[in-house]
Amino acid sequence: MARVTIAEALNKAHHAVMAADSRVVVIGEDIVGSTEGEGTTELGGAFGVTRGLAGVFGRERVIDTPISEAAFLGMAAGAAMTGLRPIVEVMFCDFLGVCFDQLMNQTAKLRFLSNGRVKLPLVIRTTMGAGDGSGATHSQSLHGLVASLPGLVVACPATASDAAGLLKSAVASDSPVVLLEHKGLYGFESELVDELPPVRLGEGRVVCEGDDVTIVALSAMLHQAQKAAGQLAAGGVQAEVIDPRTVQPLDSQLILASLKKTGRLLVVDEGAAFAGFADAVLALAAQEGFDSLRAAPKALTPLHTPVPYGRAAEAAWLPHAGDIVTAVKTMLTRGPV
Image 1 (tube, rainbow, N blue to C red):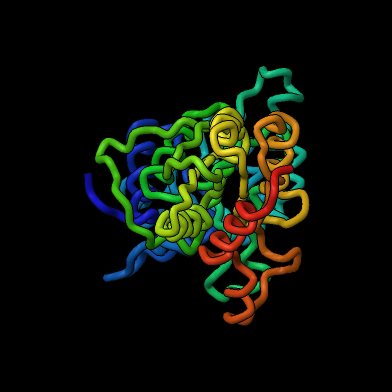
Image 2 (cartoon, one colour):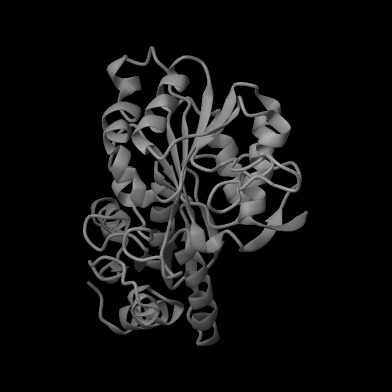
């Protein structure tokens, strides 16, 4: 095993899937950038994830596009329908609004409208997340919104191995997959197996085992939950931390099994405070795990406002490990439901 960043793991996975299947193409804005002139290098997109692909696989398979998300997502959907397996990079998930018709009414529905006769092996890679002062229109976490569209698989990796493994599984899928990568985690290092084993879509994992409370968190919030679990353990509280990895389909059985053991549930999420991923997990607990509950399930999310631009306001807006510790302690001190 080697320790690599999430950006490096994604780059390795791109190289692996493109080498294994000539039908895989990569499409997006500035994913190549300038390659002309002595000493110039590929940009590799806004975060360098696709750097080096064009030099190995050529400009026919690594395609820079004009600034029109609607156009290149529509192009990719058509390419997927006719035999290719495109990976599309949308710089920020905020920009999915520009191509929402292609996402909602075309990509998500084509397999259904064709009664399964048309396959749509399309991967949409995009970024999510606040914390770097990018402002309200470049910092949203729209995984809950995207997962509400029937027909889309939605995943949010938190480690290098999961980022690479989920991308490999997404490319192998005949259904469209949206992979939301937290831009604040691209430099996060973790262990990566050289073979880059696929990670099954719809399968979560238990990150920390415990008996007192279940904490469900993904993407950057998973790392805050792990920090909180360590602080809670120092005080004698054993938290079980679950990383669903995939928002849709959700590993409901994993969450319900943990809830049956702990009786308490806290969902920590960077997405919407209303009708987002956190609310979906709370609904699962209420509908299918009610008999297991020993306290009311809770969600910890940012305020239901746009992401603040000021760094201090943004930091206060985001949930942190200390907020998780406080929420868990409050849950433990209150009486049963």
